[in-house]
Image (cartoon, rainbow, N blue to C red):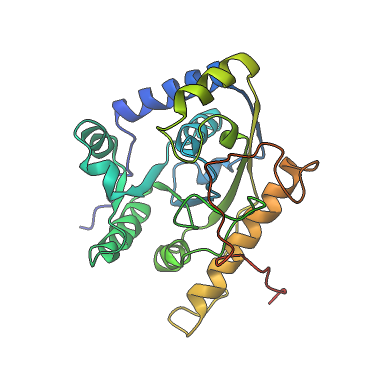
Length: 258
């Protein structure tokens, strides 16, 4: 007799952290969350693909997910898992380690596919870094998120956020205290929007260029989801972080419809 594995359930430590994230964001900013995650997808399998604009993004996204009843497992850089205290907490919370630039990076994709198959919601940053586009629009993405979606068959929901760059600067912890103090006084608006589910099933698995086409679709969807959050900042952000470098080598050019 074949038994179905129990779906992954977020550990208590992660459920508590989600509540703390909501409190932290509420203290520093005014959080506005729009869009939704369909109830049938909230317990996975599901991939949330978000833009990355600030070191404060994980806290903002955790708070936004908590408002929608979602407890995602975050694919995070291996450096966090090697940190003495944070690393232990990340592992206990069930997050997924990504050792970029090493042979082990492929294991992260397998781990994430297995987690999704077990009913997890996986949160990924398709850009693979805090974006350095001068207009702070999503950069050309890495193919990991698309390959994950194609491997496990999970739908992708684009998630856009705007405003977290006003709380923590790019070079945090350098300048972090100043940013936090400014936010406590001004409480900037931080917006998060969940877009419509994106299905990549029409892309032929294993065909040349499939992962890149899927990645471009995901980045296009994030860009479309972000645009309504910054209607008065279409070209450049009002808040400029002087410590943030600019890199146009990974500028994303929107693909025409397939």
